[in-house]
Structures are given as structure tokens and as C-alpha cells.
Image (tube, rainbow, N blue to C red; front, side, top):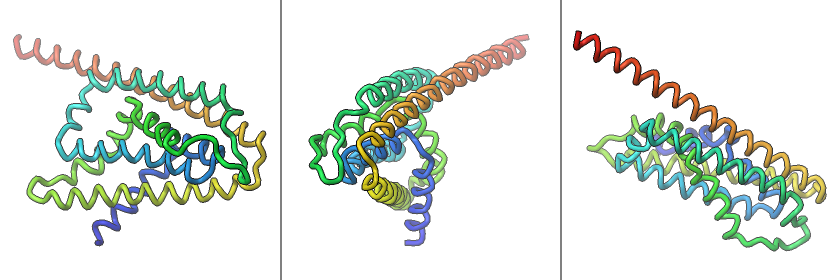
Length: 225
């Protein structure tokens, strides 16, 4: 129980920094209410579960290879750029006030969260976050410990999502249609900013790759000489 509660706190800490999923949750929560924002969070958590299983199976080491990460950063940047642009373009669409019934389906909001989370750049970002926490926790002789840690992290993320959306739902009660539209535009700008961050990471990864390659070539020449 102590191990579980410890990693619940770790999960909350991981989820607190605003990321692309949090931005989409806030946007959908303001537009369509608590359940739709939570649906986005659950879509993101689906990818979190897949990543934890990937770590358990040892697949994370493959995804961390530079020749795989670099194109994933670039594709993720394009993906978030498109989502951000769509958020700005359709800022006045699918808005329901607290006394209105949402026209958008719950599964559609879940799909939004899933698509944002499955963005290759976002997966690389979460691999770096989960990697530092989970890789050192895996012990082949005690897999139950790893499962408890994974469940604890997911619980922490879920608690963060519920807390965040409770605040969003409370704020939504005093917002009008124009304010929600502006919030959607801001969300789009933030998502586009994340795409810029992914481009930066891709460039950094390329520089690091060629630097490492140059060092290896130098070492080989020194050995041959």
C-alpha cells in the first residue's frame, strides 16, 4: 500500500505540468462539460496503459532509438499543428452552455484524447517521462511490484484529471459563448506551440545523432591507427 500511494503521488506530479492532453481536456471541458473533458483524459490514459505494457515487455528500448525518435518528433509536430489549427478554425463550433445538452458524443471526445495522445511526438515525450520512473522499477524477479507502480501512476493521473476538470466545470458556469470561443483559440495556439517544441526536439536529436556518429568515427580511426 505504501508503494502504491507513493506512486499515486508520482502520477499526480507527472500529470501536473500542462501538456497537449491537458490543453485538449480543458478545451473540451469548457465546450461540452465535465464528462467530455474526462473522456479526453481517458483517451490519453489508454495510451499511457499501452506505454506501461510496452515497458513491461521491453519495447521501450526500441522506441528510444534515435532513428525512430527523430521521425516521430517530426510527425508529432505536424500532427499537433493540424489539431491546433483546427481548434482555432472551429473555435465557435460544438459549444454548449451549462443549461444546454451537448451535441457532441462522448466517444468523439474520447477519440480526440486518444488521437492527441497517440501523436508520435507525444509518445516520445511520455517515453522520456515514464522511462525515468518505470525503467528503474522493473525487476524481472518481482513483476508484481512493477504492476503496482504502474497502477499507482495511472491512479495519480486519473485523480489529477478529475481535479482539473472539476475546476474547469466550475469556471464554465460563469463563462459565456464568446469566452469559451476565446479559450478554444488559446488552446489551439498552445497546441501549435507544442508542435514547435517537438520540432526543436527533432533538431536537437538530429544534432546529437550526428555528433555521436562523428565521435564514433573518430574513435574508430584512432583504434585503426
